[in-house]
Amino acid sequence: MVYVLQQLNDNGVPPLLADAASAEQWRIKREGIRRIWMEYVGEHPNRQPTGYEVLSKVEFADHSRLHIRYGTTNGDEVTAYLLLPSDRRAGPLPAVLALHPTIGNGKEDTATFQGRSNRRYGFELAQRGYVVLAPDTITAGERASSLSEAYRTAAFYESNPGWTAVGKMLIDHLYGVDLLCALPEVDPGRIGAIGHSLGGYNSFFLAGLDDRIRAFVSSCGFCTFAGDPTPNRWGERDWFSHIPRLTEDLNRGEVPFEFHEIAALAAPIPAFYYSGQQDPIFPNWQSYSQGMDRLFELYRLLDKADSFHYVMTNGGHDFPGAVRQMAYAFLDRHLGKEQTY
Image 1 (tube, one colour):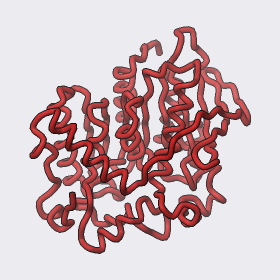
Image 2: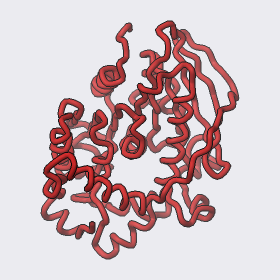
Image 3: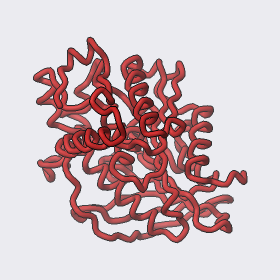
């Protein structure tokens, strides 16, 4: 599967279902897409059972915040906040992995009141009664050598020349799901993911590999190669290099997949996407809206049309309050959260 970039720009996002008119045909096509995706991001090594270490604990009126550290692959460790609602009388609770956007302080932005007002989705979901795991991604928060060096991946690639930052983020998130499933406070059948920007595409990347994610929210995280003025954002850069090999393809004017195909790996998991027409980072909204249309056709084929939600406003690269409330209601519905607030 190779697309000519100029043809994507001229003709738009390719159909998902032109050669997959049934659920069974889609399953076969999906395996082909997944094979190419894993070839590019790198297959995941086998995961080992891991516990976590509590570094500190802070009590609030409605939840506890544990500063924790847990193991991941190759002896690495993830720093995170684990938010536990104070009222756990109803038994095991739904949980979410709250994935942060591109900001130097990482998990602080999503899981604390000190985070930016439209990025505190982890904190707000804990107040709503969810167990929340908010990890630092590689090169961010406590996993950066310094805030000025956040999102510099050169050292990672020196140690892992055959891997990718996307593959590393995904294995770390899979370990995070493992941790949530092992907590006595969590119902392992009600785990979701939510994120904005970097966290937004990590949420659907993760759902495409792990069906333990039962619903996900992606805010300003979906973009297509079609219409993108800076497609090498996904390739090799002086800053955060997602999948370096893509630069070779782009230099030939080609891409090995389109991103609605990668998002489609998560189908039929309930999905909530948000984007803004004035987003300066992902400005090609006409193209990725077409990608959303293609995804909706797939969910309809799989008889899950009511599980797919796409919201667009004339906003920018943000996660505004009204949209967050819609996203939380979506998670409540699909993760079976009792609305007692």
